[in-house]
Each structure stands twice: as structure tokens, then as C-alpha cells.
Amino acid sequence: MFNPFKRTQYVELNITDQIQDRPLEKCPRCKEILLKKELIQNLKVCPKCNYHFRLGAWERIQMLVDENSFQELNGDLFSTNILDFPSYQEKLNEAQIKTGLNEAVITGKGLIMGKMAMICVMDSNFMMASMGTVVGEKICQAAEIALAERLPLIAFTASGGARMQEGIFSLMQMAKTSALIKKIDEAGLLYITVLTDPTTGGVTASFASLGDIIIAEPGALIGFAGPRVIEQTIGQKLPDGFQRSEFLLEKGFVDLIVPRNKLKETIAELLAMH
Amino acid sequence: MLPFEHELEALIKKIRDLEEFSIKHNIDLTNEINLLKAKEKDIRKKLYSEIAPYERIQLARAINRPNTMDYINNIFTNFIELHGDRLFRDDLSIVGGIAKINEQPVTVIGHRKGRDTKDNIKYNFGMPHPEGYRKALRLMKQAEKFKRPIVTFIDTPGAFPGIGAEERGQGEAIAKNLMEMSVLKVPVIAILIGEGGSGGALALAVSDRFIMLENAVYSVISAEGCASILFKDASRAREAAEALKITAQDMAKFGIADEIVGEPPGGAHRDPKLVIDRVKNSICRFLAELKELSVDELLNQRFERYRRINASNLTL
Ligand SMILES: [Zn+2]
Image 1 (cartoon, chains in turn yellow, blue):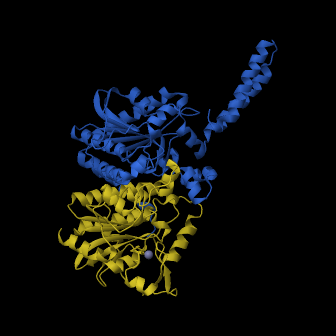
Image 2 (cartoon, chains in turn orange, cyan; image 1 turned 30 degrees about the vertical axis):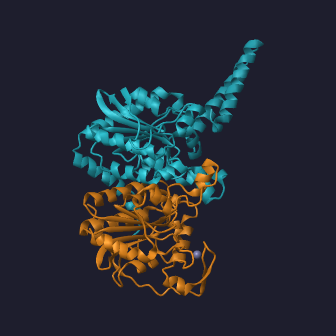
């Protein structure tokens, strides 16, 4: 029997301050020029129009977990070009250099207002957080630790879909992760998903949509098929707001929309009630 | 005849013309005809012995290829179709019901494609909406309740990308199937008979045994879609088909397909009866095999099938 702990390696979280050489940032929605420092202080939400900027996985973890409490799991897992797919290795290398991450998801455990949880955070800066073997594997191993230690599991999703370069193996991650979520379900453990911009494709059609409680950040694009594919198929423009968090709330596919500045306390409250 | 068979088609026509000419004008062309027939044999052999993935896609999509209804009607008896998801409507792109195989009741579910454009429009070219997956899951739960094994036939370009499908939760519907199928307490056998398109195929394919026809293809994205996204050029689909590794032979190598059912040269539509009989044989054999397992064994093995996928490829 496979033992997840054998592969477990916890490392101390150490984030250096993210103030960069570019002091200004333009809001993609309202085009307002914002001071980077103020934007970061505002959890990367535009103070003018409430646009929620996409976050890197470490930024997310820093906003979510209690200081110095996060222990990373499987931080050293990285993908290989299993199918010998053209240019895949180069893309992986580029993504690793660009993000400083080994793969598109960070998993680990940490305290959220004093409550311990297993946490998976996807990072769309890494190849649009497409799901390949390692992303699927890291999520499954996080779920297995949640099962073994009876911890709640929280997944922050963001994904452009399947990692095409891994062919059928990427598709199989959908079945693999969904089977693990069923184990979490049967064990009576809490599973919360937080859908962030953008959550699409195979991730939407697997673990992202299976939360006991599904939270969405405001204005996030959430869907199975991408808007461009739909527009091409039906030959018409999609209405404004289609596949956005507020649309999914109205249609009954998310439980609640929580702005970023209320996210940590909302999750902590939910954890406290389970 | 499919596009890649043009050369062969032209040669067959030429032979026929010569034969007609020889009879009509009473001229002996035996030598010429025999030469061409030898050439035809050569081309046939070359064409069908090493079919490239891109040609297999064309075979898998061929409109006259045996479809789910052909298999259901010729493998099972007493098929009773059951309709609807009890929530929204009946999705005609997925067919399901109860039938018997060797006197044993089973639940049968499959993607439905038509024989002509009119039927294909009715069945949405085998591309389900969420209600199709929900109907399938309802029938699977029903099978579990009455301890009937489940047989599914996979043949879809993928789940339908449309406004209604998104409004009604296409992603949630597929996810729910994947999750619930992983714990169905009855044997599930899936047969990929044609196109295995992405999540839309997988949502009926989580199973204890996975059978694939020789020219069927299983892919996370269509070759055309992959080419247009990654190569920025949809016309490079042939390259994408190679790179994605989508054939039955690939799936057997990866441990995803348990068995490949052979097709006659030129594809399953050249001899549907032969192929359908072979599929029936495989189903019966696997049903007998799975019957021997306890529910716990069945579920453990199914879980491990999916859990272990790729683990051996991880670099630690
Ligand atoms: Zn703004």
C-alpha cells in the first residue's frame, strides 16, 4: 500500500516582500493607475472598481494562513515530459523560471485563525495552472493527508483546463482527484473549494465543483468550456457576465461569493462550525 | 471511403473500368488488370497495416461506423430505454436503459450518434448537455440498487460547449459522475467504440475494465483544438494527433485500456457483425471475471486503477 508520508517533505515558508521595481499597476478593468504598494495593502483588489487581481499561490497563502504556520508538502515534485510532447519541456522550464514554482499548485498544511487545514492553491501564472500528472498527484496526496490526520481540505482553484501536453494522463487526473474527494466525503471530512479567476475545463469538471461548500471570489470566470470555444460553436457573442461568479451564484452552482478581504474570516468561521 | 483512402478508391475504380471496357469491347486485359490488382493489394496492406493517428481519427468518426445503438441492438436482448434526468429533460445524445446479456439483466448507457445529418442534429452529434450526464448517473445508481452490472459505450466528440450547458452546470455534472462512478458497488465495463473526447467521454468511462476498439481514439482535446491552441494552426492537426498519443495501442501501453478489440482492414464499418461479436465476447468474459470479486475488492481495484495513474512517472 502506498504511504503518502514517505514522500512528505515539509519546508518552512519563507516569502520575501513582493514590492517590485514597478511601483505602478494599471487595473485591467477600470484602467485606473494604482500604486502597487497600496494595491498590495488592499489584498490586490482595485479600490476603485473592486476588481480582484489574480494572485500567485504564495501571495494567496500569505493572505490566508496564520504567520509562520504553513508547511509545504511535495514542494519538490516537478513534471517531466512523459509523452515527449514538442516544446513541453521548454514551457515547463520557462514557467519555473518565471514563477519560481516547480508546478502549478502548492499544497501543504497550515493554520487559519488557529484551525489546522490541508490547503491546495493553484497558480495561474504557471502554464495557466493547467492540470497535469503532478498537479493531480499533489492534490491527491494532500487529500490523503487530510484523510489520515482528519483535517479539513481547502482547494483554491484556478485553471485553464487540462495540461494538453500530457495527453490522456492529464484527463485521467480528473477521475483520480474526484475519487479522492469521494474518500474525503465518505470520511465525513469538510471540503471547501474557493473558485478564483479563471477556473475552467477539467478542473471545473472535477475537484473544483465537488466542495461541500463552494465559495467564489467576485467576478471570477468559472465554467467548463472556455468562452471563446462557446462563441465559436454557437456563432454569437456571449452576454456580459456570462460564466462569472455572480452568474453561477444565480444559477445555483456556488454557495457564496466572498470578497477577498472577508475570505480568511469566512473560511475560519466555516471551519469552526465543522 | 474516407479521405485517406482516395488513392485506393481511385485504383479500385480504374480496375472496374478496365474490366468493364474489356467485356464491352471483348479485349483481353487480364495482364493489365492483374497488375493493378497486385498494386491494389499492396496499397491496401500499406494503408491499413500502419494507420497513422490522424487517419484513425477519421475512422473513429466515420458516419457509417457501428454506433452505440448497433451494439445495444445486437449484443443485448430485451432492451428497454429509460428516459430523463428527473431534473430538466431527456438528453437524446445519451441513450440508456435495461437489457439482458446471456439472460443477465444489465444497465446499458452510451453516447448516441446518428447515421445521417438529420439524426445527428437530433442527437446533437453525440455531445451531451449536463442533463445527459445526470440521466446516466441516475441510471447507474438504479443499477447499483438492483445489483445490475453496468456497460457503457463511449463515442463523443466531447461535452457540448454552449450557453445552456454552462447555465446548467456542465462541469458539476461531469465532476459528479466521476466522483460517484468511483464508488458504484456494481461492475462497470466501458467500451470506447469511436471518439473518446475529453471530459465528455470520461464522464461515462470510469470503470473496472476499459475496452477500446482498434481504431478508436481517446484524447484530452481534439487534435484540431490542440493544433489551434498550441501550434496556432488548426491545419496541423495531424502533428497534434501524433503528439497527443491517442490510439488504442497507446492506451494499452499506458495501462489505461485493458483490451483492444481488432477491426477488419479499413475499419469496423467494413464488417460490423464481426466487430460487434468480438465486443460481446469481451463483455461476457469481463463480466464473468468481475463477478468473482467481492464489493470491497471491486471498489479497491477500481480506486487503485485511477489512483496509480502516472505515479510511476513522477520524478521525486
Ligand atoms: Zn479597477
